[in-house]
Amino acid sequence: MSIPKHPPPAQLLLSLFGSRWETFWPVLLSLLEKHLGPADMIGPAMPFVETTYYHREFGTPLTRRLMSFKKLVDQDRLKDIKLWTHELEQAHVEDGKRLFNLDPGLLTLERLVLATGKNFSHRIYLGKGIYADLTLLFQGGGWKTLPWTFPDYGGSAMQTLLSEMRRRYKEKLEAVDRPADTPPNGELFDIDSTIIPGQM
Image (spheres, rainbow, N blue to C red):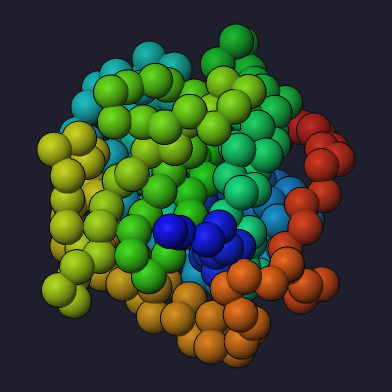
């Protein structure tokens, strides 16, 4: 029979997209690092052209970037982090429109899971309106898409960036060096739930 064990910590990453980076990025980066800890990697802004769904709210040209953070997180924190990023989005709205979209995710050696507030057939409910979206699998030395994977996550630029994040994550796991069934220690991430909205 299986015995429940505490899984190893995961690499926290964040998918961000918007169109007016010069307006919000410096302040947003400062807020993210204040509450989620120092950034480990910040990817370039990549064109987000697979859909026009968000143009009305965010404007154009719309770009997405990924960033990861130095501290690892316990995997059961994804829901809390998503709720926090939602509050951050809502704290920075102009004329009823968000300046940016934030989707936190957990990268492990096996997969990439993103948090979302939208239900769908393959998404697993985590509680408080948040679902886990299995976005990519890592198999045979590379990333594998699924029928529902958003197209840009299947692109070479995104997957190259994710592979580098995964490589660094593997090094961090080796440094943490704690058994998978032990509780987290003080070296891991603990979110500061206080938000300082401010203007951008």
